[in-house]
Image (cartoon, rainbow, N blue to C red; front, side, top):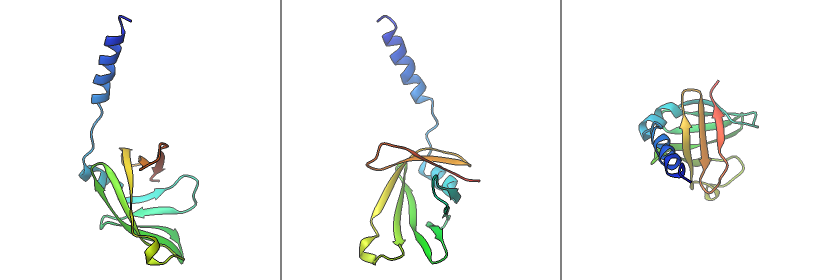
Length: 118
């Protein structure tokens, strides 16, 4: 019991040591070609705010931006669907990102996803 306060204080200090990434940092590092786990397609995230995934005539695309630590994606092209079925923003909380890996949690879910750049 006498170590409880010390351990609690130490955990708060360690939690505060992580580097907080700004939306600008996330936006800069998100640009590139990403490999998505368990998928054969790659996702290209462009600096102009667009993204694409898929091949040939089966390409899904849309726009993206970063807001309050979330990547916000809006699908604008989904093969086989009418425009009424897409266009709603989907938010992904960025847990960590660097030049080779991004880990995020889709809003409303509890499991994280990690994507990588080759």
